[in-house]
Length: 107
Ligand code: FES
Image (cartoon, rainbow, N blue to C red; front, side):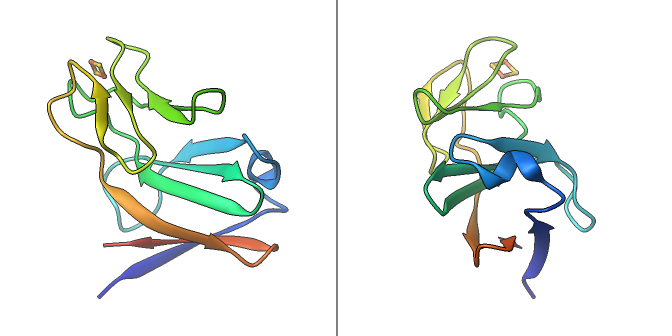
């Protein structure tokens, strides 16, 4: 069964603006998750653990990518690897918002 996590925008103020993002752990999922508002009211959520050596990726609002600070891997917002050394894509989750909360659906 899918599990959802709900992030109230009032509690996660960074998510309330386009370009903002948060990285954190949620109950029921082992890895950290990155959530970003990529354009007005549109959200992306992915497993934040870089598939190279396990650093946390960060949302890059300028390039609309997820960037790993450790060895420079970059990923598309759908998780696809743009440049390595990351060997595999990031897992992407469904994310949506009703303007009050952001809801992320975990596998
Ligand atoms: S851990 Fe991300 S590029 Fe190495």
